[in-house]
Length: 394
Image (cartoon, rainbow, N blue to C red):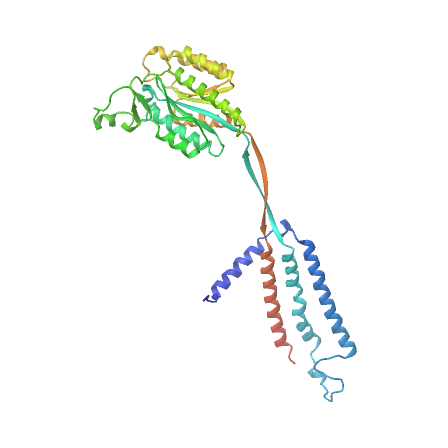
């Protein structure tokens, strides 16, 4: 059984309703049932007019329900209500016009219109992320105390956060001497892409580190579970991975011709590396193949020379970056963590998909405001009526 509300609860409801009412911008209200409200108002006006006509006829012809003409009882003039008392008695009836008007406004179905813009991506970006996992990425990055591999992973995760909700199709590969697919084909699952980027090794090397002690791992730049031992790896050769990526793009294009589920808004390869590759000539030819397919390369160049296998690899760095620029790509030399984040932010801007702005109008009902106003007016009318009744007795 429901209990009746307490006085404090009623007072709380009245206070909230009053604040809601006085803070309403009535100029912003729109009405969806004006015609119906006008019809109701006309019916109400006809009823009031008929009532007034009846009262007037009763006065003229002396039709009184509880009295008869010449009944034999004479009422003293002193006992009759005066003009002021009569005015106070009729005032509550006049005051009823306020709640009746408020009800008509409520019947007109008032609402506040809010416009919400929604971005709808009509083109998707197809991106292959390549992260260097060679032996040089295991060295500490500048004075950060972290390995270049860890720095690259953290920045990659932030990039995925930047791209969240933009419907990218992403594949993710690591490379050392050979390609190592982490996310081999394109997917649009943002959570899965994030988890794979997080779980991927920081370094792929051929060295047998099973005999390392805990103290040796603590002295190294990464924990043991971030190191993946694969025979024959540890160097920095990019061409095999680039050729695998080109095949991936070609196969994907054939699939889309057969079943075009979406409109491709651009294709790109994002390479995070210290750029000290050992197979520059082959990579230069691969970059030209990307250019033929209108695939844009971006290189985030971790500007740190420590850890390369031989000085000859360092000579390839400027040549590789020049080649990327020549075919319309971009490179971003970074020397600290903040610079890497800025580079990813710039790539995020360059890879903006085409969007359509869809405007939706939401209706927020406001009839309850006029219902509350009606209740307040009725309460005032009742209080005024009772006061007038008590004060009008001679």
